[in-house]
Length: 387
Ligand SMILES: [Cu+2]
Image (tube, rainbow, N blue to C red; front, side, top):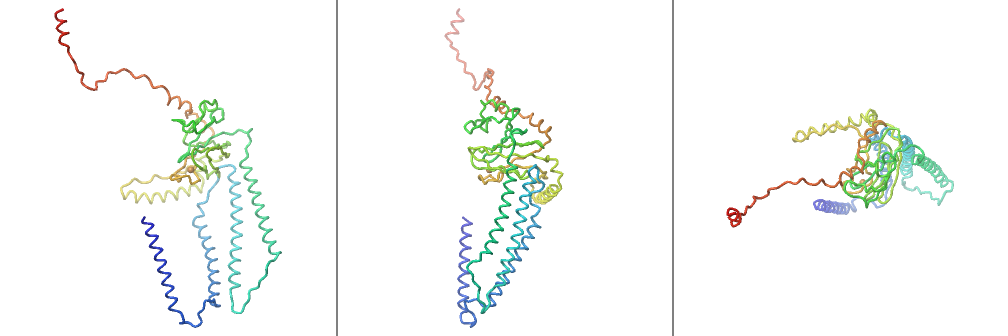
């Protein structure tokens, strides 16, 4: 309500300023004989130089952005295909940067050069086949090259051989969190359907499927370094997107279907923590945290804990109110550590059996909830005594 009021006040102020300038213009009528609605040489020159100033602003702001936020780009890729994605991205960006720098300059320079002058007539021609051929053919060749290179890279990333040794992992998305299912010893994920969701079986795994017996459901994603992981993605409710920026991987999670993405992690979490760019990033974050902690402690609250780097799985589709916090930690281990970690996790079927075991028979216990009422039948007592 307050923002609506502020909005109306701003609109009213705008209308007031507009009306004032109109009144001001009216007071100026007739005071200057040379003044007319038609732009003169001076007006055109001012606009010409303003165009130059604008292109200068674009260049300066670009350089400023690169210096100020340039370190926010993704650092060393942590997957085998990551370098290919980075390369594709770099080529596209350099090309865009180069073309935009030249075309923006030409656009503003010619606007300045051919600004209106008294007595100068504009040259007009309907079309120029040579020029049109040049500015059509060059972009066609460049874009076709980029698209073909992109398709080639994408196919290389998405292709995996069924014969090669891969690990199947399911990523299950729901509002607002992730769950992970490992396929177990048989390396086959059991069937699943949203109709089977019940109690501890939060993923709707079909527990009558033999392949599902050794499946394990966990809420932290561990991956072995150097092994190809094939992710099978599902969603329980709406569109989500599994985004693993450090591994240059992203795939939509669509309700009612299974999507997939495969990659080979090539740096463990411990190795990535030693990466120079990551060390610098962590230092920067911890400096900000330390600064905030001073204020928090002054207010009598607890100081923020220092940040340590971890890979993350994020949701990259705006899927609802808590979308921003839909994330999961990813840990890349050595294959040995990964095996040990996974072997310690219980299977879903054992968790299910435990949760649904018949409750043990209660031990009979006399509970005295109220004082017992003793009724003595006096006639019976007398009869006993007489006997
Ligand atoms: Cu989401």
